[in-house]
Amino acid sequence: MKKTIAILAAVFATAALAVQVGKPAPDFTGTDIHGKTVKLSDYKGKIVVLESYNPDCPFCQHQYKSGAVQELQKELTGKGVVWLVVDSVNPKNPGHLTPEQAQEQWSKLNMNATDWIDDSGGAIGHLYDMKTTPHMFVINKEGTLVYDGAMDNNPRPFGDPRKANNYVRNAVNNLLADKPVEVTETKPYGCSVKYAD
Image (cartoon, rainbow, N blue to C red; front, side):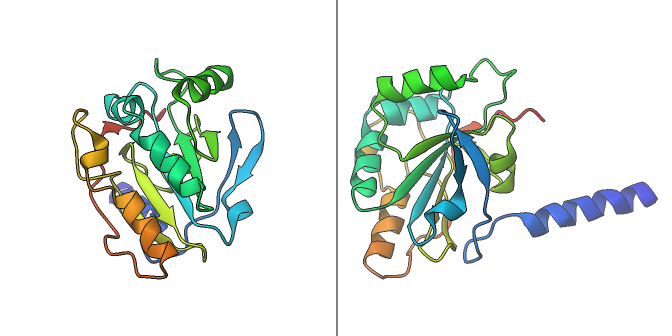
């Protein structure tokens, strides 16, 4: 009985800690692929996009090989938006990249994000309950989570992503126009995040 109560308490505690649209986005501290400390609070007053990323995931590979994500990153960062790539692949997984390998991939793919965070310990991924790669989050200038879900409405690793309805672009453009975000939650699709546990 005590074991059951402990398990239920852990489940409810986890549910209570889960991020929720309309609530403050939890702050985090991570290290980027250059060894620099990155905090969400460093970007207070800016719109922030979080992208859960796995270099080995066919869904991420498709988005990047097409060039669609890099174009979107360039478009949005050009409007003052911060785009943080969060790589939570654990070091024992074959898809894990060292910081040096990640820097090479950044250059090879011509990524236009603001930064790439090495979250191989999974702290940020678990904090945001990142389920898939990609799994996208948009945080407004006030620090409130306003979007949680898929990159777009094409849950397949083929086809031109530019022809899909991109939920991230739409959410950011709503915010930039001082309008409410029309679509706040969708079901993320892709590969499961390769956490250590």
